[in-house]
Length: 248
Image (cartoon, rainbow, N blue to C red; front, top):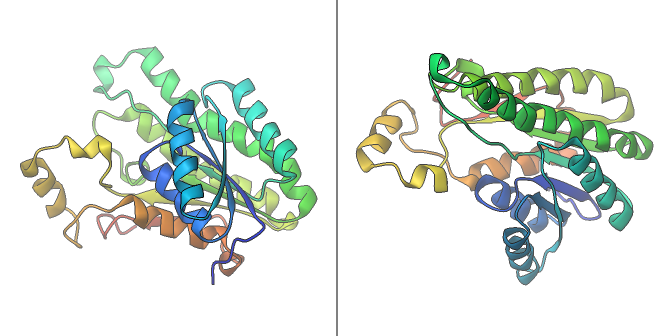
């Protein structure tokens, strides 16, 4: 079940946190995983860990804010490995501020990275996926893209846009056996949340029926499913992985 042997996967934002867990999860199922991010040293560490565990991995430096960088990275994956079967758009940034205090550049850079960057990666990956008549596009959105969040109008707009993008791509590519789905994580234990006080975490947990934050592994498991043949009839969907925090 969830056998990904022979598949080539590109995971953006794979140098840490959720992206690292996704890369390792796909590799455990047999995929050759190309890890992408801006910091090469961190990527090399993740690749080494995957290989030490018996998996297949490579890396490519990519800056999602640069369309040229994204297209070059996708082209490098196809050139090196002959195909790209799975694309996971996970990378993202935040520039949180209340609407009235937010600078235009803070809005633009988040949209350019989190939404336009994902669009560029999808567009660059589409031709090889269509040609081979098999593909999985998985976009990591967010629960806040479904419900909104004060102080994150830029991030929320990007994640809500990513959900809409996913549905449009799913309709356009379905005839070529390419699926597109989004995963909307809730609160996840990462380096970003590790600095929160126990009191703040306890308040978060009160809003979650399962009573805890998620783990990067929870998101990785959902990605593995959507990347597999077992999810062949699932497209244009948003899989909420949030412990019951939001039930749309």
